[in-house]
Image 1: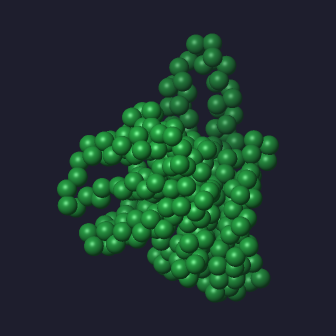
Image 2: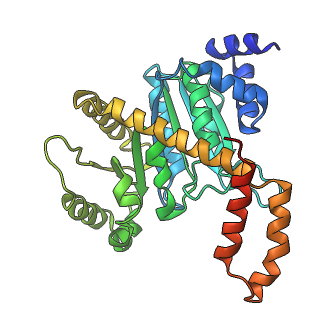
Image 3: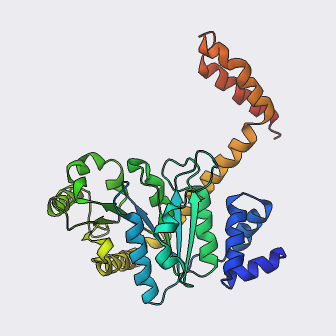
Length: 319
């Protein structure tokens, strides 16, 4: 498949072409880089939703039900399920794809499981690139369901238009402790499994914390939605709040601001990634190996080794 032909097939929504493109992008091949370059001026169609929260909160079930609702409304939906990286293969564990198999067979849905590749927030740079591929392929919504690793999920908010934080009634006692992490990034809060004891208390705790945020008429005050995803209850209310948030971003002219911030963060991440690749060449790896024992024995400080490595890097840069 020629490169231009591949791009054309992606834009036409060809599933095989999309799948190949995602593999090329995830593996950082020259073809993948070319695809991202080729579609860079063709994105902006897809609305991006992040679904995050602690493990066991029902994120996959919620994503499954929300996807079904969106398809019923005539939308095309892509799902990027960011799984924990396998310690053996570096690949993604496909549990999320198995759990979402109900929607996975629908031709209006495309599910891609991706490894988090060590990203603390669970949403890797490659997942964001996958979102661009889905955007170019004219999917109306792209849902990023992330690894539930608690307060490290701050990069979700950088990559999406609406961030949904999923909690359960048992989260009530720990909501105060979450304030510095998940509580700061949520645009919509979901108390899932709300038929359990403590659901109302969890909602009340959330309301108290959210009311303490600085806000005025230009600030979105996150709503709280009670759901029972396993029984498909409350999903329509969740969609309504997503639509409300989208309208708010448009009305307040914040939509473009968010997307500009997203592009800025993406460029910064790419710079860091490329610099890391250039920095750790064979010579500097040898410098590190030759000095590490001295650091361990206290003969030289880590800062001294760092400076030596940086000086070596600077000397190799051609101005």
